[in-house]
Image (tube, rainbow, N blue to C red; front, side):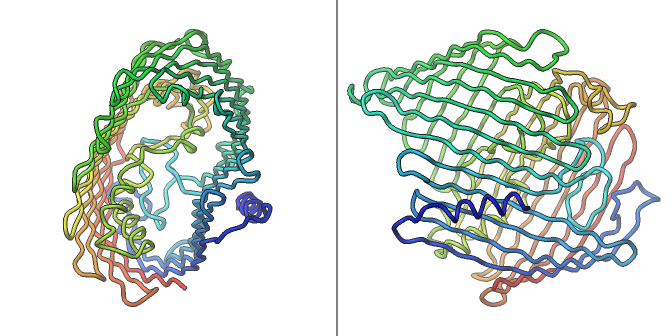
Length: 503
């Protein structure tokens, strides 16, 4: 939290800027009474019911001055008091900021988060702050990225970025990384945009993981693109990469290439696809979206070498929230109420910031292949969202470094994993002040090495009502179940009622 405060102060104390600033600071207090018949998510016969009271003060800050300064921060402190066990306190933070320090030259980006995360994709999954499991821990992730960005007319647009990232979770995880990136994008304005263009990228990153020897990763690539048709363009990328982590198989370095095309026949449709080869084999990528009057479809596929800590800074595919924001403009004219409605809908249906698969704790390097299909339909009084996802991970380094996370008897569990999920969310506006949201999800985590398979299903119902300006109430019901061929099956039912006051 102290890091984010310093980043926020740094953004706010930038040199004076002319122009109007749009800003809002909204303190909130949420009081919630809830009951669960299985607070520890324990197997049948060991389940224990628990009544809890949750008091959650929070604050939401939004500040904007055109493109010169943006700051969005949401912080909540959860204080949970139980009837039969010790009280618990946890924090939730989601903050990001952007500032133009020197006009046209120097910029600053900052991100910070504090959240409860599941440690493993196998075993009990935490879905409510009042639940207590050994398969969860608090993760703090912070990044600061100053960069120089300038357009050199007739030559190129240059961006030189320095990136600092910190991820920590007590004694389980502590990773620091520092990197520099230079990108040059050619200026083809002289050809009226009809000629080809080029894009040069140089990247170097140093990663210091408390459980590993330091790792340096370098990458250099040149991309050439050419417009075949106003709606169709082709591109070719060639480069060289080197990563000095201790791989289980071949040395992680070598030349690579990819070839692909971009197709944009209309503002409602886009498609980008490519295939190529890297040191670990053939690679494919896909990014497509199709918008109709009341519906949007998106599909994404990506392959890359990644780590657990890098996934905390990855940006999920966008489109669903933007689509709803535009679509609900006439239904909910007030921007803040519209954003809150969208957030509640996507959060209950578990589609905001997650695809239903767990970014499990690990010190290892993985080849990750991710596929995601998502859609939202919005009608006159309701909306329906669908999310399908699949994530395959193949470890590139030894499992020994994860013994503190998984235990010595399960080191091979996450050598090769496959997670898949299907999620559906439905929202119905009962009136201008009330709404009903139903969410259902089913996910599966499978170890392709040990053949362990865990399944998780959740059904939730949320009824919300705006009592008066700044005061809202909601009632929440849920049913969850977990099944595994390794044992530990359980069922859980929960109910809660809450009042939220915004000052």
